[in-house]
Image (cartoon, rainbow, N blue to C red; front, top):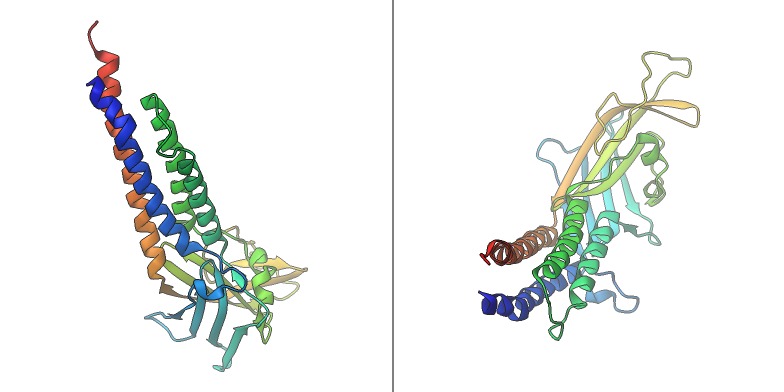
Length: 273
């Protein structure tokens, strides 16, 4: 048993660490930021936004790593039935914070692993477990950033930098939000109507949410607004799906290694003297 345990600490642990590094380097590469002068390293991908239930909102989004480099959106208004067309200004890119954060967590996991190269000798099972726990924490945080979009209040959306990205500028009764949910890139469009200044009809400002419903109210610059319509369209980003699979495989590898260590640990703890 002792020989086997020493082999595990010396050989198998490093084999698993190498496997983890290879998987996470691939995940990190997909998240990469285009380097100035080398933009072509990371291909731009176009995604068509669609919904099976409506055609009020249509669009094409261009994603390059963590940056939305272009958005082309058509919005059919409820009032006039006219189609409004918006695109990102040429000088603007929108960073998707969720992808940026997930990449940072992956890179922290890689740093932890690279600090224990093949020349390093693990002396105890507890030392391996401590490393696995630290790596698993970063991977769980990375995954959670992609599976849990940030909740925002309606005033936060109204004053977000995203509203200044478009040409022509978005009208005052339209708000938009982009976010990642699992392997999907989502666009939500809110159409608003201004409430009468003297209205007190059950005015109840809404709290934070990923997706606000029609009827949600908020106040901004002493004016009160109500959400009249909500349109959500989305597209699947295949490499995000692959990245989530990489996270799952990596977490399983970490757990399997911890399980093997615990088999030996229980042997040491309970062996008869």
